[in-house]
Every structure is written in structure tokens, then in C-alpha cells.
Image 1 (cartoon, rainbow, N blue to C red):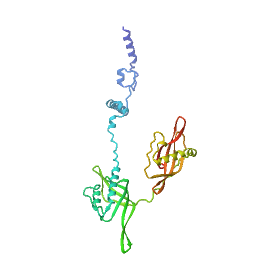
Image 2 (cartoon, one colour; image 1 turned 60 degrees about the vertical axis):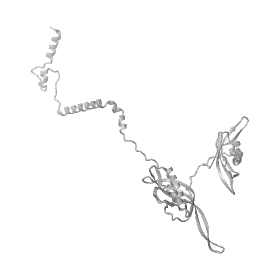
Image 3 (tube, one colour; image 1 turned 180 degrees about the horizontal axis):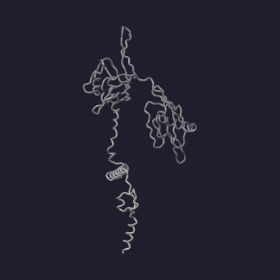
Length: 338
């Protein structure tokens, strides 16, 4: 007999239960199959939960296969393409064009001559819409000239409109009645110069800016706002004394129109206009510092015609060295203390 077959028969005999003591809980199907374990019926709720969990797991696996695992980790580039475009900011109002048009309008609007009223109408037509009223409320009386025009702030409002502030220096001619010898009455012309403000309404249309209607005269402030407290630079008294002659020599040459000998190599200082005479350097203070480039402030008095006026300059000095000596010379100059 084959030893493997006898061993299998013996094992099978050991696994079969005896007929006298069958387990009460073992189902018939298990006994018939000769299984070495007992099968216990599972409750329907547990089976449903297990089947649901398996379904969810397979759903996730299927989704990963369809969309790709990379799409879960790396953002989809196409999603960025679908993002809404950034909001476009409105273009800035053409302030330069508005100021230019308002300035031309202010000059034409405030210039009148009762002897030639058509000249004002022609000048206004150039900055008004086609067919607009070119008299603009003038009664065609009197004489007035515009000496200066200074366009200022542009304040956008609505519908591409804006308000432009223009300061205008006008000269008005007035007739003043005065008594004269041999006559009961006589008249003589009297002129008055003054600044006035003008708010000019403009609108942007068809790529251009035009005046939309009558302006309004407004007051000009008597003075500006209070200035902030500005920090003044520390001074170097010793260096100021050391370079005082350099600054005095420069301004004498500056007044004479020839600064080449008193300026540093490569420096260019345009000459002053005719009619200015140097009275003297009122003061010179050097800023604290070190190195071959230094800065200071000079106050200088000039004579212009019959008047004298003091002005302020910022002077930049540089040290110029040669084979046997070194000296300070002016490298740059500009007005004001800023």
C-alpha cells in the first residue's frame, strides 16, 4: 500500500466526528464537508456594514484609476486656467491733457476786450465742444488781460468728468472818475493785478478732453498750510571756516560769468543771467561729515536792478589733489535748502 494514501485515510478518520456526540452547534453542512472548524452564522447588520466598506474602498480605487493619483497631490494646471481673470483697474484720468485744456480755456475765458469781442470767442472755440456757446456769459464790456496761468489739481468725478483747478493772474482795467482842471469830470484808467482761482469742468471723450461748460471763480488761499518741522543737518564749524574762501571765490566768479577756474574738473555750472550783481555771501555753513565730498549751505545777497534780494544755495564740494597740493572746489550748486 502507498504510505501517502494510508496517511491520508488516517487523517480523514481522525477528522470525522463520532455519531454519539455530535456538536449541537455545528451545522450539518460543516459536518458533511469534514471541516476542522465550526461555522457561525453572521448577523445581517455586520455583513451589510462590511459590504458597504468594501464598496467604498473599491469606489476610491476606481476613482484613483480614472483621475490619476498625481492629480490628487499636484494641483491641476487647467484649474488655474479656469480661475477668473484679475479685475482690471480703471485707467488713470488723463490729468496732463486736462490741465493743458483747462489752462488754455482759463486764459481765453478771462481775457476780454470790448473793442474786439470776437477774439475771445475764437480762442474759446478751440477748447469747447462743437456748437458750444463761445460768449460763456460775458456781456462784451470792459478790458482784462491774463498775465499768468497755473493749472493745478485734477479731481475726477463721474462719467469721465473732472474738475481742474487753475490759478490765474489777471490785470483788470477800470475807469476811475477824477476831477480835472477846467473840467467837471474826467476819467483815467486804473489797473489792478490779482490772482483768482477757477474751477474748470472737463470731460474725456473720443480720446480727447474738452471743457463741458461754464467754470466757477473761487478764492485763492492767503497762505499755505503750516510746514512740518524739518530736521536741519549738523554743522562742522571748523570745515566751514576752512572752506569759506573757496565759497566766496566761487560766487565772485559765478557773478562774473566764468566758473571754470573755481569748479572741480568735469563740473559744469551754467552762468547767471545778465543783470545780477553780487553783494556778498551772507553766510556759509558746512554740514558735518567726512570724506572727499562735502556739502553745505550758503546764503547770498544779489542786486537786481535797484533792489537787493537774499537767496539760498546748497553747495557740493570735492577735494582735488595734485602732485604737490590739494584743495576744495565746487562740484555742484543748486538753489533752495532741499
